[in-house]
Length: 431
Length: 112
Image (cartoon, rainbow over all chains, first blue to last red; front, top):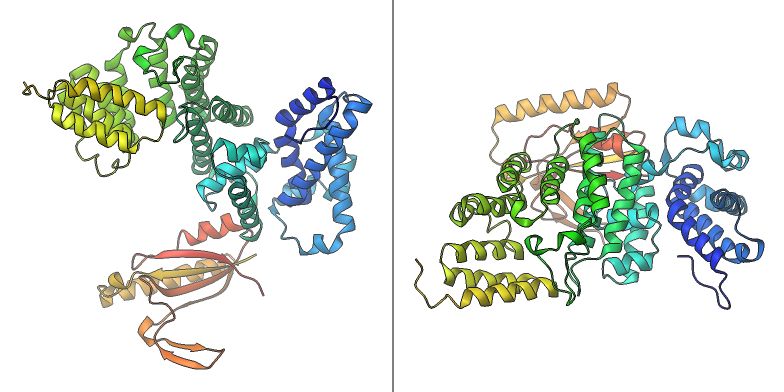
């Protein structure tokens, strides 16, 4: 956020500011960038306008249209800065924007006269620019959260457990590259769109999975980061309502996120899907996901649609025993064929174990050890199957490998329990 | 905005190609250059002779050595200098650079 004031904090103004920041940061920034053609100048001007709001709103009251107030101040700041610093304006590597868009907004001066209600939502441009494949994936994620999501550098750093200077440097470098390398500020042409949209969705999903299955840290779920990813995906769905994969991704996130309260027990340990208290799932979110899926199912069969359909099968089962594993194994087989991903094959094996038993599942794991060598879930799954066919020695070895690779305390607790259960059989000969 | 496409060959692959391959590649190279010219984006283009024909000079002290600057696993084999609207347009052209020898193309903005 924009910082805190000392003294008595007028709560109404603070709450309105926080709300305006969450709701309008990305949209206002996207708009300003299109006008001033610089990520830095736009960001500074918008930050200044929020800082001005911190001073003014508690005194003058919250304006009727906070976003209009913020935009007016921000564009004045941007225009002032560009006027005052004419040298800067000349030397600045300007972002490349579409000629069509340029014609509708005749420079910073033109924008001053436009009523805020007629201003288009430019967040898609910003999103596609932040997720450009010419940027490193870590930079895409950080830049998207900062620019589109409006998180502060400190918040992004906290979310990824990376130091703030590291994230700041990553964002600065990415912004420089966008300007210097000629990354255009626009939504890609139709011919490039499917591939580039996949790239945007991949960034959003990686934000979500980092929140949902944190790769390190004390707890396995960071709901705030997952919630942020959902919020950004809602923006994509709202702006591209015909993209089935975007809708499917939103449904997938909602379905996974709906289990957050049941996924960790009081001690902070991870609770497996089968053992979760399904009354604690967010059934309102599940219902929304089902609605989204019934719309998306008419579109192309993409990987997110299949994953969301699988998640929906789990959500549909009132008790773990009601799960339609045969249907889930079928869906995973299609997804396996579509993606060829080792992780999908691993999940498919877990489903097949439920239908056809551990021996069939073990067969599906053939050839996965090399690609998943650093993946603790691979060894955890293989250990379970090995235990299931009575090969307790191999199972204990795999639990040890999984434990050596898992960085999350809650995962480790579960693996340790399972290893102990399996180790008690170790002295008996396999049947 | 101008971009340089630095086209890198894999010398191991380059060593194995036949004269027929070379002729085919030369034809593709010309056709691609013509396409860039027709589209109005071509500034300049050329293929480079083998790395072992290179001579390296260090202007600071005038030292001259035999061979290319860097002994890399991939060697610069050709370049195309283009002038187009933005990186996306440049990348779409770079995507179509003819491939003879396990080529990688580095796209870099240039300035004068």
